[in-house]
Image (cartoon, rainbow, N blue to C red):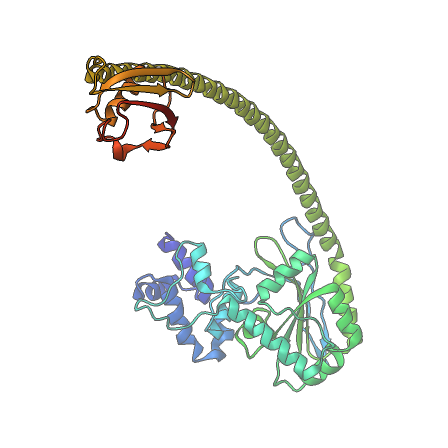
Length: 470
C-alpha cells in the first residue's frame, strides 16, 4: 500500500500545489483517499478554467546536449508565425508524461504538465492501480468527476477523423483513430516520429490552413510516408489536454514528438500559426534529418534485439526438439518394456486359464461319469430281476444306432418308463435325449406314453424297438 509520503508527493505532482501543508490538509479532509481528493480538486477548479495557467508549471527548457542512451534532447527551432516571432531561445522540451491522466478537470491537466503527470486516453484508476491503490469512485460509490476511459479516447479520435474528412476531404494526413498514447506507441513500433495536429474549429485561420496546407497533396503524402499522425479537437477532452500539455498558444498548432525512455515524450518541434505547405515541408524535413540518427539507431537496436530473440528462440527450439526426441525415445523404450511385460503377463494368464479349464473339464467329466454310473446303477436296481418266461412276460429287443442289440424280459404290467430305464442302465448310448420307436407300424413312445403298460401299448408278448436320438 502506498504510504502517506507517496500519496502527498503524488497529489502535489498532479495538482501542481507546492504547499505540502495545504496538500496534507486536503488529503486529510478526504480520509487520505487519493482519488477522491483529486476528484474533489478537479470539480473545484473546473468552474474556473481561466486559472489553469496559474496552476500549470512551465515546461523545463533543455539546452543543446549530446544524446544519451536514456532520452532524446534536441534544440527546438524558433519559428516566425504569421508575423509573430516565437519566443527566442526556446529549447527542445522534454515532457515527462506517465501513462495515466486525470480527466474531467481542464485546469488540473495544465498543472499536471509541469510535474510530468499526464497521459492521453488513460484513466486515473489505471494510474493508481499501478501503484497499488486500484480504481474506484468516491466514498459513497459515486465519482464526483467521471474519468475518461481508453475507449472514450479512441472514440474521440474516430469522431475527429470522421469530422475532419467530412469537412476537408480524403486528401489529408492519415490520423490514427486511437488515443494519443496508442498513437505514440504505434510510432515507436514503426520507428517513426509522431506528427500531432490540434484542431481549433473556431479559429479563423483553421479552415484555410487545413484546406491549403495540411490537406495539400505533397504535404499530406510526405507526412503519411514519414510520420504517424495523430489529431485532436481541442473541444474534446483529449485534444484540450494535449493543447495544455504542449502549451499551445496560437492556432493552427502542429507538433512533432517521439517516445523516449521511461515512458517519457520528447517534443522535437512545434509550429504555431498558419504556414504554407512549403514552409511545413521545410520544417518537417529538417526535423526528420535531425532525428534520423536516433531513429536509425533505434531501428538497429530493435533489429539486434529481434535477432537475439530469434537466435535464442531457435536455440530454445533446438533444445526442446532434442529434449523431446530424448523423451520420445525414453517413452518408446518404456512402452516397449511395458508391452513385453503385458504380453508375458497375458501369456501367463492364458496358460493358467487353460490349465484351470483343463482341470475343470476333467473334474466335470469325472463328476458326470460318476453321476451317470450312479444313475445307471439306480435304474438297474429299479428294474429288479429279469422274470422267467411266461404268459404274462413280454420279450423286448432294443436296437441301438451303433447296431448293437440288447434284449430283456419284462412283466407285461411294466411301463414304457421301465424300457427307458433299461436303456439308460446299459450305458450304450452317448445321447442324453432319445426316443424308443417301433417300425411296423411306426410308433414313437414319447413322454405322453411313459405311464402305459407294455400290454396297453401293444408291445405284449414281444416287441422290437430301436433307439432314435433326438
